[in-house]
Image 1: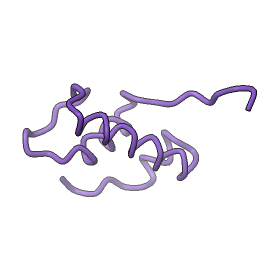
Image 2: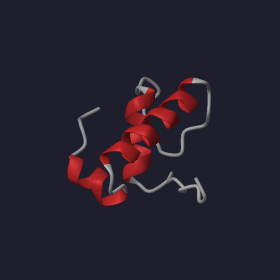
Image 3: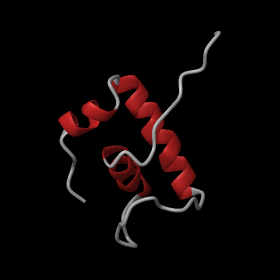
Image 4: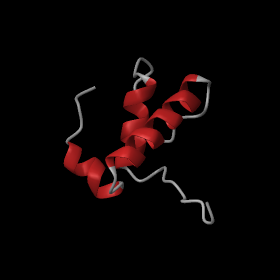
Length: 67
């Protein structure tokens, strides 16, 4: 899979740190057997799938309040 432009990712998640955490957590979920939310080839890497899900807006994050 071709590397996505960082602009597309930063449009979805404004912080590079939040982007890295979100992508890494989703990659672990996919590697553990979670269902893909986008169409991807069977041989696609979990990290590529996670990035594509972020670009397509299929996953997001919530900020916990109070801490």
